[in-house]
Image (cartoon, one colour):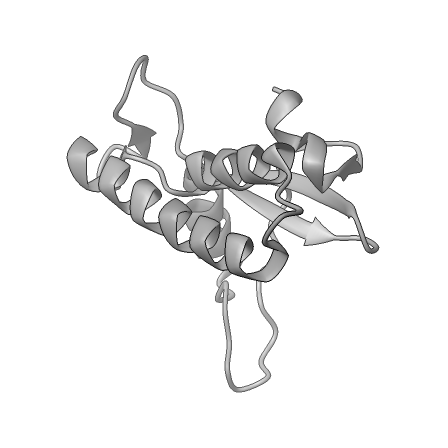
Length: 125
């Protein structure tokens, strides 16, 4: 439900903001808060797992973002389609995850982004 998605994003952002302010007190950077909000907006999504499409706005495939830290301040973003994650894994007959050390399916991203400073994430899309 849309209201659950919004509520979840808001609760997570409020928690992050509280922790951030406790740690950095007077040295709060608005760009850091905007970047955290951007990540939550990209990762907490309203989608229909039956159709594999997002629900809000025009019908688009559900996309999951992976955020990988590269060094102290840089992030690498890769986007993965939910449809591709499900069906490529099935076609390869390998699981996506394994706790027992067996081979797993390594998905291909639908889009890769250049390295970016974490404080500039919110301004890139």
